[in-house]
Length: 303
Length: 312
Image 1 (tube, rainbow over the protein chains, first blue to last red):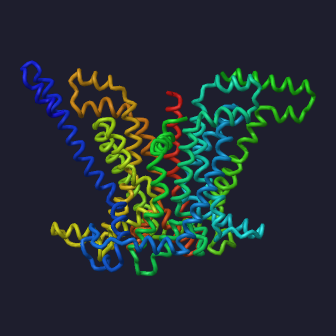
Image 2 (image 1 turned 135 degrees about the vertical axis):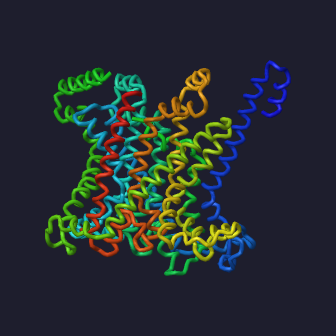
């Protein structure tokens, strides 16, 4: 860029172009400068997690330079990954998130198909209702849900409170509305000629869905799956309220309640646990960034 | 287009009638199929969202043991408590300040990312979105450790500049500042991504036309970028307002409402009152106070989303 600017500055007629590209170069430099500043702000906590997770307790309490590891050790990782309790949290989180993703897809794909293609009585109202449900936050519902679950438990005799599987019923309230909403958008963008052709060829509605809509809207499906998984993995309030026994906890609640013992903070282990807990969403994000971002922006741009 | 689909439904019905099987007739009908396809969704929404939502209104009118109907006395009790008004004020300060800063930072950073060459944008965007990807409960733990009073990395760094140790979470002002800071850190990347997508959709010709007319960079932003992005800015801001107003994770982990309940939001206070002190009706009552502001924001979002749908 800069050599280009110098070359062009030679003949007097092209000075204008030269100064313009010099302006651009400076704008670019300033952009990078500020981007680096913001990147430092955005990446400090995760990097600090990593730094602390590589330190021994002795090094942390020695209060040396907190931004540097003098004696890197993997002992925190070894300790956590060999602790049955932590593996239990990880297992609970994994099973809950995976089953919730499956439930979410089973509910939202057919519903989105019906709402996008079959105009029936009340379909527009229902689509709006789905979107409104998405706007209801978890912090509004946790108290009545706690009581409702208690009532269901009393009536049916099935233990629900303090069991990890209760989350399988609760999490879909967070994932299904948004997934249905963005799937409606993706399905609606499929040309009508495609499913008309299928109908003319004698396909039933279900065949149209499985043979045409799901394959064509696969990118949207992946985005919705990622959303459902990350939301279930990150959910903190519901498991905090509905589960208390140590063997029933999911990762976010497990780390915050068991690794913090009274006033003693074993920061090396807490940071290791937090990093391991953040790993699955980060790995998914690293490999499927475009789908992740598509899902993020779809909520406001589709529909 | 819709006519064609209706005709097909009629064709299916006619064929069914010819075969004389009324069950197949009913099953093949479009509205029946549609009903069964949406039934799980409707059940989920009615049983696990709508019913609890209305049940919470009922709960809020019971006494602490949930044996007696007490009408509105839970509400009047709250109105007389100073903590309640502090929570109202803090929730508003928290939500408004955080959303404004998130929107500003998102807007500014989106421009910087938009400025750099296309190939590098992907890398930077990927890096800057990381705070949004990490589960908030996990990243807030990292912030808690950064704010730690005795081994705090922040205070260690500040000591080189001669700035005395700051009680990040121990002092009312700094605790409020900290929870907002963490929320801004977590939420700004979302704005960044939304604004970046919006910036990309502004046609380049508009900027060229503005440049020919002699517009400076400020005029270009004010007269071209902002009007073109108005809808997405409105939706993102309103959406973020809802999420921030109902925030729980960050405040719960960082301060648990302290010092002296000064950083409590509706959600965390409702949790403390309703679950920890097991006064469920009062907790339900507290969280119900979120409804008005959420409803207003939701109405505006719905309007903008529909407008957008009609434009497209």
